Length: 151
Image (cartoon, rainbow, N blue to C red; front, side, top):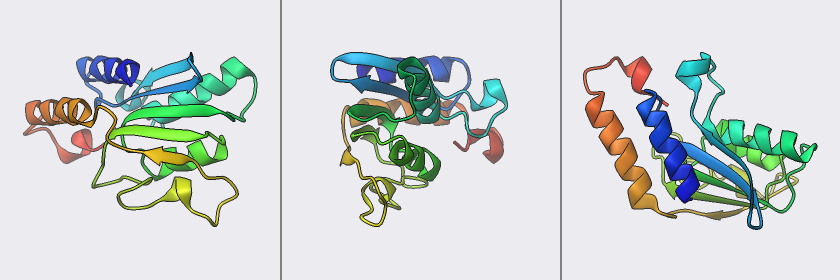
């Protein structure tokens, strides 16, 4: 999770919402990514999706069996769905997202028994540090239009 927090700090420095993600298999780090929506002008350039894509490319397969997705913020519906489709084994996240959280808060996509794959979920991993990054970022952005502040 420390690598994900480092990526989130880099995102904030670049003017992106400070969210970072890592995909690892055991002790091997396969991918580290930060939000890039502004830089890429891409609404899907969330840290989790970028990390899942990079891990798949590195492994040469879309099946990320045995992998763990670390995210500093609880994944949104898009990212939770991508993790399920990638067959990640675990999703560990820092702080909950009361506006878009889709693995614990608003929805439980990654553990829904109706889907063909479920991931183990664990929140609160270095959650205070992740929340602090978001608080500082959004406090510094007060007065900026809502469109730019939304994740």
